[in-house]
Image 1 (cartoon, rainbow, N blue to C red):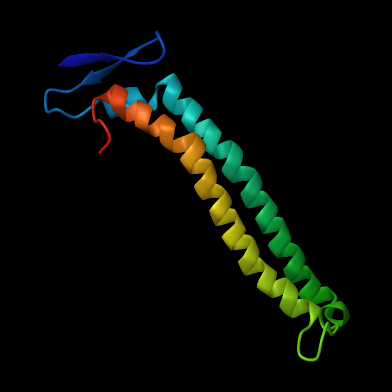
Image 2: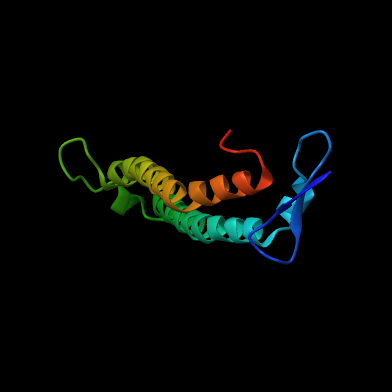
Length: 121
């Protein structure tokens, strides 16, 4: 069994004899906990915002059909535009998460892998 130092001084990662890192030690490490918090700080507000936006769309469709049927042009209604904007919002969230992950998550994951002895698999 081999011991690898972690970022924090509270504990070390232990590599088992089978060559695999000690995943329970990694999951309990301050670095991993910080990484999970960083992801949750992005994911939870964005999810709440999108679900609220979707709920508003559904409520408008159910309780404001006059508004949703307003014509913007010949065959285009407000409801159609709001419905299509759901797809646009989904793509925007996907792109925002990709940028967030590339800048904030991927470097931290690479450091954790390096510390755990797995390199950049």
